[in-house]
Length: 283
Ligand code: KIV
Image (cartoon, rainbow, N blue to C red; front, side, top):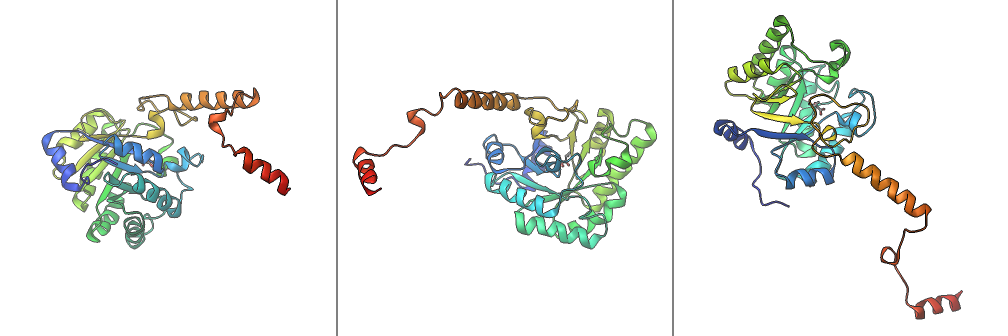
């Protein structure tokens, strides 16, 4: 484990004040969390994107609160000091403020989160307010919001026209006023992200595919390492092709087992002659 101090809200706001960009990645399991902790990543999002990246669904909609809690607990065990954000899955906050508070509370109590994230603009501001008033730090999510992908017409850039961009600016203000300490802007034009960041008063603006002028960046871990086979979004820089490394390893394993070159003596456990001879006698 690292000797880093726990990343807290004051740590994040200090980074903003010092002009140091915040690093944020998705993560869904213990070994990856361990590595992200070692790398000193500030924030970890256990996103409901795990429905696609880990469970193989075509969307995030089938993900349940139980799925999220189990994965978030594993991530917390691997990354004790990162600022851990639990992503509220589909229909765990949309129906009422009370439902939102109860599910946000589950994340905090059962998975030791530092904050929760939920999707949506002004229409979700009262959910954010309720959660924050219950003492739970909350993050908003605007732009491409995958839980509304059907209504948005697919995984595409949001806020390209002046009118739609104005709506996102207003939504961001509504979330900030409701008490969101941060807002994620996913796939909005860079200038729109810059504008919202400049107008934010006490709110951290994070970018996913929305350009460099936010207070920090988020990437989906599986996109960064070639681990999601179905598509690769433009915003996802591949920082290392782990998918290729693993595939080559798997092919090597299959070839060595088939060719009888694996296992070798260093890969198995022996038994002293005396014990073996006794065994034969016993049989
Ligand atoms: O679920 C998730 O990983 C997310 C990102 C797409 C931002 O919400």
